[in-house]
Length: 274
Image (cartoon, rainbow, N blue to C red; front, top):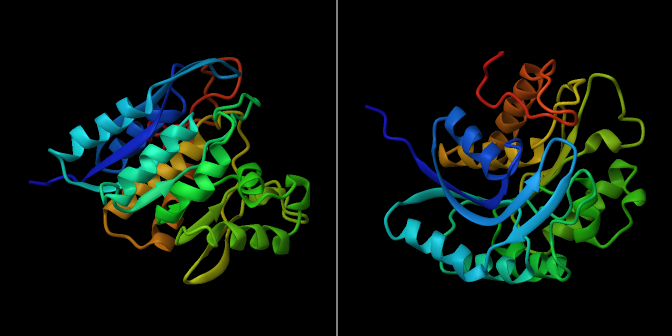
């Protein structure tokens, strides 16, 4: 009999079901780990917009984590949307207590539709309090620019992206995965989607296939969740990231022709079409 490893997502809920905790739990299930939850916020959103965000109090977020960890041994944890600087700090305190092993920090700051998902002061809280506890952080290009305090328009070359990655590494995480290498000058092709990984093993470009589909809602959440699942299964970070990229590519391909909603639909987490 297989005994599944337990993991946790500390993140917000997506009423459209494509991102956030909903995407994380489907990813965990697809990859064979048991998902637990600490909800940080409720959002009203669909496939093309976020219309409202209702954050939970940081004390309630912390209570969910401590109640679960009092009973269940976690093997890896991810953070997604934390919504408030005080919540970022509360999660950092939990990490400092050793309650969040193999911590993957997905620094959710703004939605793809441009809706702010973090209150003022959140970036400083990430830099000062939470990132020093991260095994891996997974910013997209825009989030990396904010965390590295540069203009995203400057991140048009590989050298510039590696430089901002080194700045984020200096804040304390062991590894940094910068998603969105397809914005690199000269890297935009119809069939490739490279990302950049920095850490003790050096600096590398992780290539991968580009899937031509509008159904890419929640890919960042899903990638971080997949990293957590593979870390929980005892893979090292470079291997976990490589497997996670392959998982998301399959999920994008599986949902390429779906028509769920009028905007950016969900991906095929469960492999229904693969």
